[in-house]
Image (cartoon, rainbow over all chains, first blue to last red):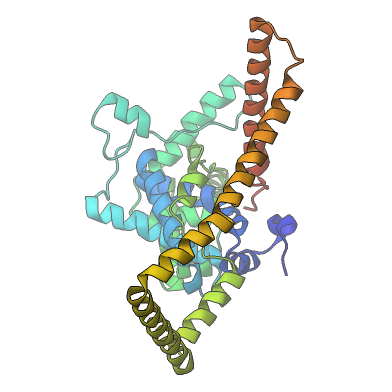
Length: 200
Length: 163
């Protein structure tokens, strides 16, 4: 049996198994593993930090309260990302937010709101100049991703930020493998077009 | 432009280096307050056993039997009491004098002995008002430190999350 001390080395399936045996530390371990990837995915989808936190919270509450319904033949990460992506897509559909604001979130109507909802980039740089450059470049790329259709955006984020293989993306998004490949191909083409200036 | 392999490579590099974002501090605890962690497995098995026992016919008959016997006994006892009030009040008075009063006296004796002992121990201590205040402050400070230490000790162990 997996013990508390080696939880960080345990596989997702083992941690889920422990959580099903009512081990609270296993619940927290799953949260620790997935809070950044899930929050990043949702934040990039909805481009509003507060909203992304709420949707991420809903995602985890749903996931952790339904652990007994999780089927171990699927990857745990696929299950979590599927619920997170559905939460984001549902929200975008509800609010008809297919086209997003360039500077801030879609709900940003005042300068303060724009500032609050703009994606916070350039946290990992070394000098102020690097930071400025990275911030500008990062903002441009984030802006270009924000302009993609939500399905393309999910595909690109899952593929490039989360490093998920094509077949897992197909499971997460409930799409045929061929469609996923097409979406990623088209999304890249659109990004190359939007980023023409900076790729030269 | 869109078919340029160098551009595709540069784009891929940029996309792969996009950072992840952290939710605000306390996110984990906020989620955990809304998660229902099931009780430990031994409690679950006890609950299952209790549920199946209640559902089984034998246990139901036993419970009904016990309830019936208790009801009949209580009725007989009440009837006897109501029919014979004088012997009963005598019996209560005897129990009070033979057991109740000595027990109460013994309890009072023990309490007053303890208080007296404490007073005897503390009476040689002569503290000025400032010293007494200082001692109180130190004791309160220790109490606060204890509470903080307990809180720290009970905080769940933070482990590096696998990504």
